[in-house]
Length: 194
Image (cartoon, rainbow, N blue to C red; front, side, top):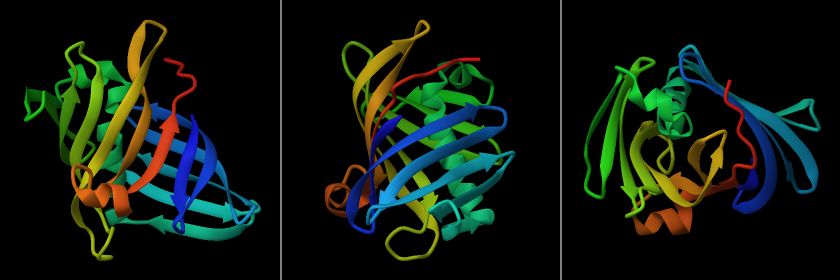
């Protein structure tokens, strides 16, 4: 994938690769720049343990976070990103219901439960998603905060169609999303199912 990410109140281009395995978790490895200097790192959720590790010039730590709160937030991200693995949404740990704008699903897996509301157009294309995700945005204290974003395009990969262009962030569904919550815009360029 590629896109822009908001770091220190400035939008920076990034490229990234993600491995997503429903039974185990994910590793999202990305490259960007801060003030022209290369920064790379990863967001990880593996077997219930989450972490974020980022380095400047590949050697100087600029961000490191782990522990139960980070793990809980990362599991919420994994549950939301199940939309990239449609078969995972058919498993016994997923319950479907009707949400305010279309279908919704509740995932009870990986030690957490997450309810995800979808906004689907008349042709069945995902246009937005919203969930309460564990995070420390705004106050610095961890709590559930509205999270999600809009999907503006989709594409077929090996017979599976998924949304491929996103605007993502905190406070989704409120005015705060535009002014302070949105931090991630991406396009998925390729997808390989194994």
